[in-house]
Length: 364
Length: 132
Image 1 (cartoon, rainbow over the protein chains, first blue to last red):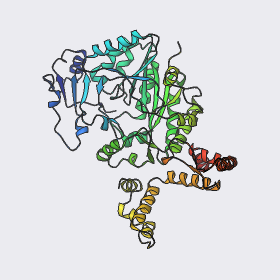
Image 2: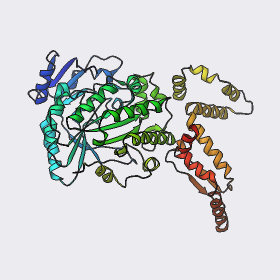
Image 3: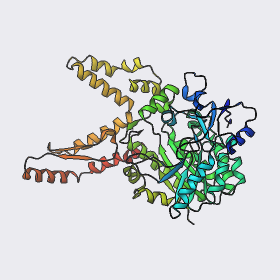
Image 4: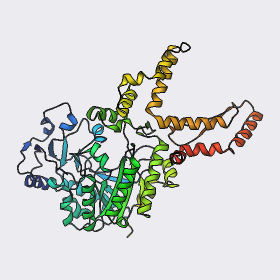
């Protein structure tokens, strides 16, 4: 994987001397740093080409986050929810997947940002976790960024692991498409940290997951993390349907489950390609040749486009069949799907989000 | 227009080639059709090209519903895009007696294999078996 390197780091006044700032200065010694006044961060924008969203990824902004870090995952109306929480320590991502929903979600706020006030993040998380010790929290850090793609420079996750590894009622999930795991290997995750990869066949990665690690690189990183004591997760999301997809996905599953110890997997999720009419417009503009625009997607009641139901149920069933063939008892769940789809795929649907969320809790 | 662009991208053809296909010509030159009907039929044809497997599944379901030979007072349909996997049944009756008769006939129709086959199509099962 070719590591991302920003052209410049823009630092908002007040963020200097933070641990993240020190890590950035150390790792990016040859990159220009510029300090700007508080509140004027976004006045320094990259010179615009026709691709404003892509331009925004060329620089890295270091700023304080002023809202809540810790939130419930928004999910999608009418879909079975898994009771997931999210912590956003950065915004946007240096990678550039054709289907990325951030192209729409962050279209007016696309600057690649890392938040310097990691102490506030930990304090906020601690207030919630210690107040609700009898509640199990599954927390992810990859909702609006890649959890590890910037780690070689920011060391952000290295600031978080020591805290979260000590919390008895948490599993912290670091979801990534990178292979940037070197700095994680020195920590003891104490069974509380899950490193998870979004996975797709190499053909999909080549076509539509730009600047991400290859399948082999992701698997190599996964094995290293598992050997270092981390739990692993895999997210087959988005699953892409195309001629020959069955051959490619089945081969990928076999390769994955031969590489890692599946009995120590925390979870596996599946979700087909999802977009919105707005995201499709963005994709059409930025990636006009992507075949992702040509799938047989229909508009679902939650406003998202997905492959029509019989097609995606067929895809899910095949994936489950292939996974059960190599990992009979691995926990598999669906992301952003209705009860009807759950019942068609698994023969049952979780009664509520807490039931599904609790199924992910580690047995202690 | 999006559909035409997406067909062109998928099939690596030009839009004018799609609109120049024989079936489009037959619709646009059919003297029995008014302008609105022509537009509607061309749009439907483009939709079938854009969503071939969805159209095939919808057709298969339609054939099976027809095979139930239901009374006109009973209408069976599936949702747009087949989303939800549910069969919708609408009964229209003008009297208690008519309602009872329709329910009896519906109940008899439900015993036909076509009903199970419709649910299988809605849940993707039959499409798998057909391909295998």
